[in-house]
Image (tube, rainbow, N blue to C red; front, side, top):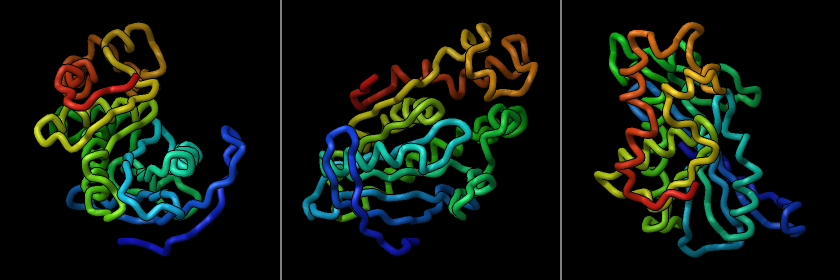
Length: 231
């Protein structure tokens, strides 16, 4: 579903220029029962077929977190950006937008015991990102041979996994993970920021720890990456 398109001007403090941009909210099904909200940002003065990126926010964030970054590159380079709300964000957004599905609570993050990888929030986040690529492929102003994916933190982890999974279809042409964690067992051992994403007491001796890493650690997917990765 596409909603009303809005034109706006964006002053870029990095280039000291003002750009004419347009944005449009949309929703799509990433899988049965889960509706994803996204915001498409593009240059209002460009009618050519141009590169596009799926943008993924970090843990606890929403689509608006990377909006300014999208506006900067949409204005300067004429790229288009699909800023996605991760599953479960509908429960915490203040502007009425958001995506349905399991949220990124610590319990949902490692919920793999009974359902396998399909029980984890990360599984659904990766599917949302890949479906976002499909959405971009169906926009006439997007060059399908130049679609990339990028995300910060949790979004960066999703970017690496998606790039590995997409090695079958090779639709992603560039991946840019930003401050993405990897080597989960070491991160948990050293009690880095990642421990905020898992339940209290979830350590390397937990019966699900090794299995969780085998499903979602970027170290598993990095060797499978087909698209160039800028880190």
